[in-house]
Every structure is written in C-alpha cells, then in structure tokens.
Image 1 (cartoon, rainbow, N blue to C red):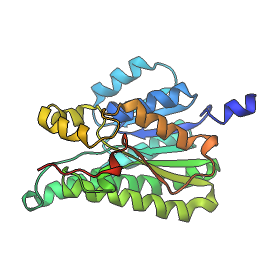
Image 2 (cartoon, rainbow, N blue to C red):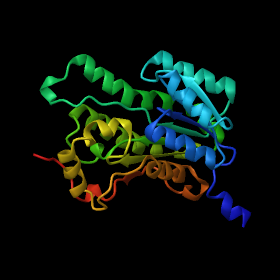
Image 3 (cartoon, rainbow, N blue to C red):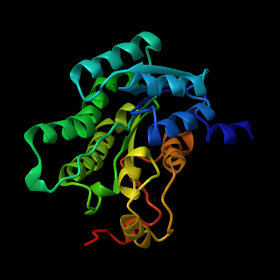
Image 4 (tube, rainbow, N blue to C red):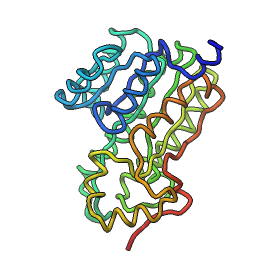
Length: 258
C-alpha cells in the first residue's frame, strides 16, 4: 500500500519553479509542497515572493531573479548549487506576452518576449542538466500554451515561443532519456490568472472563448498545477516528450473571433 501511494507523491524531491510567485506558478508551488517536495520559487518581484513565503513557511525557498537575463539565470543556478547541490524537477513556467499585430512589433518587444518565454527555458534546461542527470529521475516541465498548438488571437511572437517549447520538449526528451531525464510540457488554454483577466474582463471576448471551449468554463491555476505534478510523479515514469493540453477541450475546435 505504501509503495502504491508513493507513486503519486513527490516526497523529498527538490524543485525549481520559475515565475512561481502568482497565477499558474504559485499553484504549482502549492501543489508540489502538498505532495512533499522542497521548492525554490523564482520571480522578479520581491513583494510577490514574500507573500508566497508567508503562505508556505515550510518547504519553500524564494529567489528574486529575472531568468530572461543571463545574470538572473546564473544567480538561480548558483543558488540551487549552494542550497541543495541537487535538482530533481525544473518547471520552466515564466512567460509574458505583448498582444499586437505582426507589423507593429518593435525589435525590442520581439527580443523581450523571446528571451522571457523561450531562451530562459532553453538556457535553464542546459544549465541544470548536470544536476538533473545526477538525480537519475530528473524532470523538466515546460509550461507552453494552446497558442503553440493552433492559431489563437494572442500575438504571433507569443505563439512562436510556445510552439518552440513544444518542439524543445521533444528534442530534449529524445536526447536526455538515456540520462534518466524526462521532459514534458503542459499547454493551457485560458486560465483564471491576473494576466488572462486583462482580456477576459471584456464580456464579448469572454463569450467567444467560452463558446469554443466544450466544457464552457475558464480553467483554474490548480488545474494546470495538477497536470504538472502528475507528469513529475513516479506514476508517470514512462511518459516523456509529450505535451498535455489543459484546455477544457478547446483544441478540438480552434479559435479566432472576428
């Protein structure tokens, strides 16, 4: 009985969650801690991280760092090495978006979205490779989006970065399987987070979203967190290279309102 239960826990695992102070990231942090993991949550804003740490005084460490920059990524890697000297789970969750027509993006905006959403995941996966390999049960989870699976009206650059994460998931899974590292991704549709609410507060737009979502509801951060946790569990030991859509059935349909 104990062996069966252990397959559905993360007891003793050491996990890094980027963008971990609110929304989906904070929900992943909470899920991991509840399942027995030790977590290091990384975000740019100290105040948000302090609120999270007050909520979880045990099992949680926090770090102020901008992983879209080389300096921020190095700070995170140095902190993990000092704190634990080991790593079992890396969740590349940090992300941002600028919603514009393709012809209106500036080079600076392109670089900002690319470095935040894609390069951070690529470089952190590479940087933490030795520690994940040493774990012999290492896991990387990329938080991508349905925007990387089909067209949605959320900006081409965002969609490009999320599609690239899907392919990065496949490539790393193939390259690193022999090293005991599983690599998977989750692809949420609209989830009730502060970022999503900036567009979902438009009632007409919300209606368009819901009528294209078979379950007719907006997802919750914990819906995504549960999927992420499962993919890191021993129960998912034979799953790698996959992208799991957490979308209420949206990817059955596709979405582009007039």
